Length: 330
Ligand code: SAM
Ligand code: SF4
Image 1 (cartoon, rainbow, N blue to C red):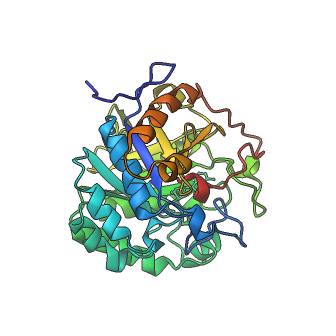
Image 2 (cartoon, protein in one colour; image 1 turned 135 degrees about the horizontal axis):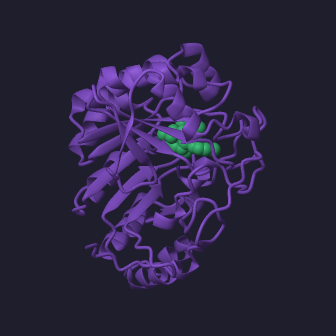
Image 3 (cartoon, helix red, strand yellow; image 1 turned 90 degrees about the horizontal axis):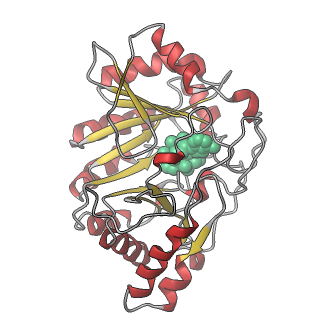
């Protein structure tokens, strides 16, 4: 049984926190950011000490899993210090989501600092396509990063692919072969309407998880498994490979009823739901009460009453949430 002290009005237990450590990034993925971005001034961003206080307080309230994200977490200076600190909190699971560009040099230090698992984003295996999706990214660097992560001995490595119809959907079979060859899990994600973008029409580009599963099934058997990583993905297995294939389907299979997570933005806004604006300003509490975490703790407990029952993403491509994913912390 969970020892979490955080339960919302709908009986859901919150024991998983995603902490954004920066809004900055070395990539500009078309579905995540505008080409020209204005990033937050430093004083609005939580310090590493403040992020650690938030993490520690959540752990004292029963949080068992923390994922560091962003923006790109590995562009935050001194990120290893934060990983080392959170690594001492005795979490069941401690993970990071990264675009992989810094992993050639950072994978091993991260593993040694106590990080247990990595999610690495990979939307294409074609260098030109990769460059056009990420705008500034270089595929070879990320592939090198994936190999460095494999060599570093993490407990788990998972690739994340946002599938866009007419964009990279034709690469699904190649991405599956790549994951099988590298012996890493892979999860396909439906694009979510976060932030206004200009490059493509999200309604038309939506490739549902059912469609992606059909593509995979043309090449492999896929059997559903009840395995659960504590996140929103549903998992499948193939009879001739040890890897798991996951699907995150905010549009086609609403995952709200089992939601066990909250997010904290790099400004210290506690977001109770990815698809709603309900939030609580933890930065004000952190800075108003610099010595003890009692007020922070009570604020987090009270905030559970604000967690909405579900999100309402529609599939017509309209933006419903004005913050970009790099602000939200994916
Ligand atoms: N920079 C890191 C990365 O790319 O992995 C971490 C942050 S990124 C915001 C986290 C994840 O969110 C990535 O896998 C990315 O593909 C995904 N993502 C970003 N914008 C999205 C959107 N509009 N819909 C669905 N997934 C999105
Ligand atoms: Fe950066 Fe990740 Fe957003 Fe791409 S998805 S722009 S890598 S934060």
